[in-house]
Image (cartoon, rainbow, N blue to C red):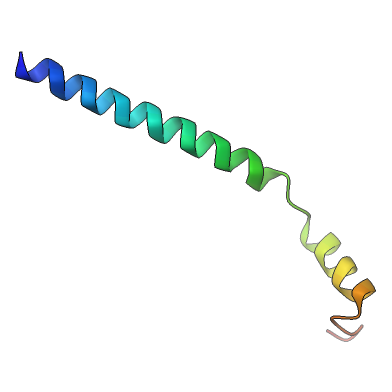
Length: 51
């Protein structure tokens, strides 16, 4: 009987990690490319053409 509780606890942890990682993964995928970031920083005057 004790083994069933450990299986349930482990399943809840795995499901929680799965949902948490899924939400963070979607947000990370929407970022700008490195070139877009550089273009934006150049347009704002934060960096020079040499940089």
